[in-house]
Image 1 (tube, one colour):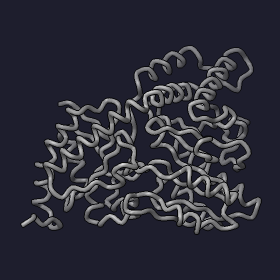
Image 2 (image 1 turned 45 degrees about the horizontal axis):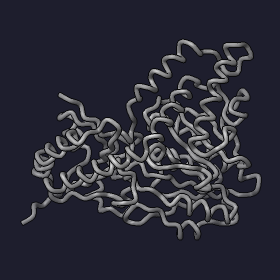
Image 3 (image 1 turned 180 degrees about the vertical axis):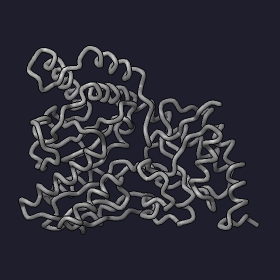
Image 4 (image 1 turned 45 degrees about the vertical axis):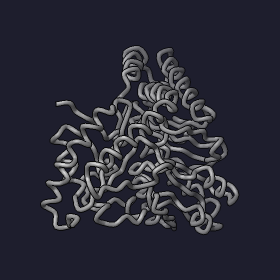
Length: 389
């Protein structure tokens, strides 16, 4: 049975060129980049070349790129680091949105338990965060605003440039979690006017365990880990050079193909949505139709539990999810869909189909063809679904 992978927002398979690049340096360049001997300096040169490549791809300076263990660490460092730094100016207030990844939400919850205050701004039914709510929420004591660029569950793209401008006028640091945006939509930190940005390697066909936090020059953050002077004293710990090289290669490939790949994703997603809705009644798309990353399709199947659909599709060799992989196994309705005011019965029956570079029209056609039997069977057993008269 062919395995069909439609869970690319959870993680992507590594690109073959990334694997080849990393394998070469695993055996040839294994020195510690902090060592002063020749082997160490070779590793340092390799790492700094990758840093420069990543900076160029983002429109940043190499000195503004800091390597982390992934998106979660980058988010934690951005939120907590900026919050603690803000205390020096008697600012202890943070703003984020209700639809953020849990790496942001849990970081803010932690800060709330440790003397900080926070406001969580909402979104409309399309999943777009309210700029007006942001303007009203900013206070003299606000130190940081963090709003994600593209939502991991719905793919909805947020008005980051406009929000960054609001924050700049108020003298507030603005951070965006761009984990689901890099390689899918154009991202230039200067064009956007943002102060910090998080990204992760394994979402762009690179390795797991590597990420980046972009910090604009002049933005103050307090380090969370202590030890050596690595990453200009912002993040202690020996750098993962081989994965850094892999990340740079993966970003170069993905960003270089944005236009053609997103055109393909637009065609595939429109085909898939039409196929499913023509074959199965009471199926609804969650999030903006136009203003989203096209590779993400979040559908709600009325009267059916999402987990049951996932397991049924898995038996057919199709991998999907009901939202963030970090919260898989939870039977609660998605916090993102709740924030969008999606009916609870629809929210509980939501499935995220996230396409990638290996997704084909034939795979989507097959997926759409097996869904009617699965949904009909599950609805027959559901007390929550009433058949149309």
